[in-house]
Length: 189
Ligand SMILES: [Ca+2]
Image (tube, rainbow, N blue to C red; front, side, top):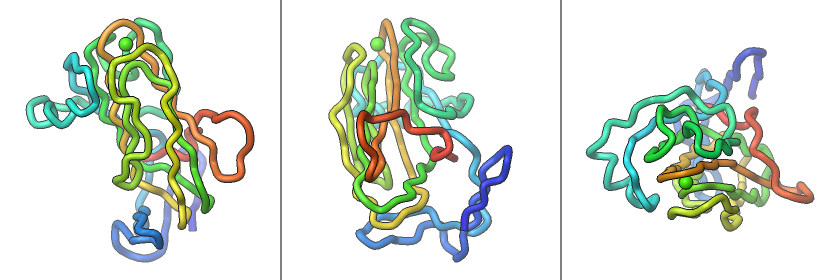
């Protein structure tokens, strides 16, 4: 059903309707002739917040300015510019797109972050480390996938001051060993 074409990702799925409800209550993208582009979409708001919950406060009051899409989330830049924003501090990033979960079973997710981060997949909070902190690993969150496919993903992340880090890690079903970086080929928007 999926055709991967050099230079871009085309997802050609049979059937109509934007969201089809999968067994287990999970929604997956199931769209006719939709082209997904590599990486995740991102926009930025520039405020010095202390907690991920403050995204909800600012979203009605600040324009979220689009940045270059993020091929992967693998950033540890010290005191340099945050992701593809225009600032080193006081950055809130709204990261959106789809993630391909191609096997049934438990997917483990975690972040190494500085400062706060929250992961939603298919509208459910999977893991968060929501406040100001130095580089550290979050707890591990689990998503049980009943039906493989592309799922909507939302990552909210902020950097308050000093150094910043955002690395998105996973362990797919059946994988052994340490968690690894979520690869770019399963991220799209
Ligand atoms: Ca920081």
